[in-house]
Image 1 (tube, rainbow, N blue to C red):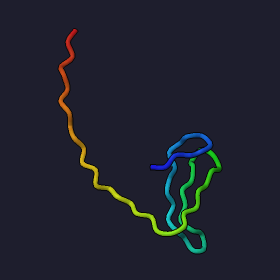
Image 2 (image 1 turned 120 degrees about the vertical axis):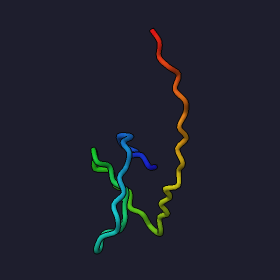
Image 3 (image 1 turned 180 degrees about the vertical axis):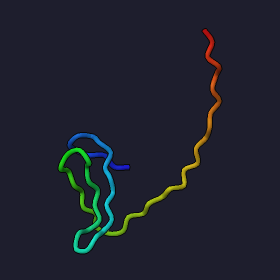
Length: 57
């Protein structure tokens, strides 16, 4: 995950298109970070479900 250096928002990824290189961009401000080279995207995160305690009043 990458975060905007200007406003702290989570950056979005945009694939390379025509003559535009791949980049990260902020959806709320004009911050853009161009990417040189290959980017590896990993999505192998196993979520562990934790037990919830019952709520009593």
